[in-house]
Image 1 (cartoon, rainbow, N blue to C red):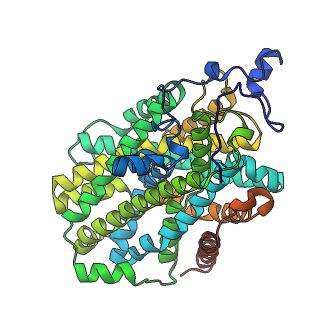
Image 2: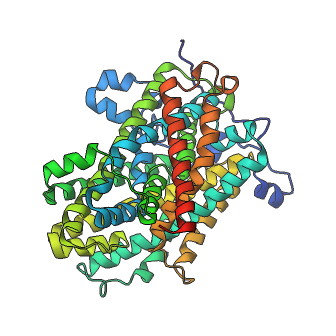
Image 3: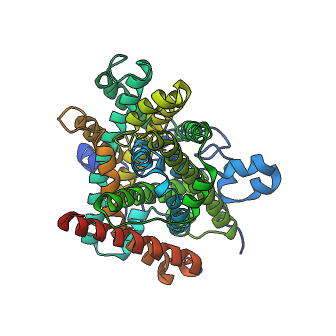
Length: 492
């Protein structure tokens, strides 16, 4: 298949795209519906795409063959960041709870969910690369508007709760770190929530997309703290191996709730939209200004995206496995089973495993929160603007895309408000994962159908293996959600 040449042009509105409604109201319709790209974009380093890769680097695997392992690292972008953001404080809190409560009983889920995650995220990337538009736009074009609207509304609710929980977790992590592991003393968490929110809003509104992605990549390093923690735990290897490869399941309400929470925090709806929108923004940064220029993809582009997704999801699952292992080997083994949050886990680890484990866990909470919060807020903004057919993205200046940034800011401020209105955002971490587990199945059905539709995807429909794992992910999450409702209603 011949390579397509992405070139720079003055952007034009696609047939179903509208000028920014806020700009339209403020200017009474007199503004240029689409100013020149150089005026709209925040700017990027010369010769680089959004994630800091060479302009053509994200759409080709040439960097792999030319640069060896460093060339391979160059193409890691949306998939790596998506996988890393999956291990946000909500995920860390969930994994800490199940590790302390059930011991090694959930280690097998890391291997089980890995191919499901890869299939789902690869489908989202494939759809974006072929259509040249975000997931919200593709879903709106194929399925009833009311159905897609309900799914996106549920996504926004879950994202806002998740943002609030993660802001609270970052602040609590800062308080815990400054107090030396004590739940009193140090900088009060309530003093940190506003500065954390303001800093992240500033980064998203003012900083160039290239720098934002560089910061995101840097923050993924915080996750290695949990991998180190797994070595500190000194687990029993034989018991560890059995728990990893032999699934264990029971039908108690607590077990099923934990299982749904794990599924919800590993296969989270916001990741679907972020993956697709990131791919589109990468193509825009590489010169694909119009939908026509971005639509269609080469095999090299698909292979590069797939490699990125596989590495990102593998990284995510290694971290998940490490957190469950650490809390099981250190906390559960010492009878500490009442962990409610990631902060509880950090404080308990200090008592049992020493200050190094505590510091690693606390730094990981802060780093992953700073990575995940902007992605949560931005994914909701991408979904909404795509649903309404309005332009906008993190690469654009806020004054030209007030609708996109307004939705993003509302998500951030809504999450911030949770920390002041009596809703405990820390306790909401686990609940958020469960909510995501209930929201994901309808979206998975739509995504799997879309990726298999030859009218939309042409010769780039999802392969048999991808479709199989996509439907398996849908079936498992749907069944788990039904079991949760049944066992909650009838007790168990």
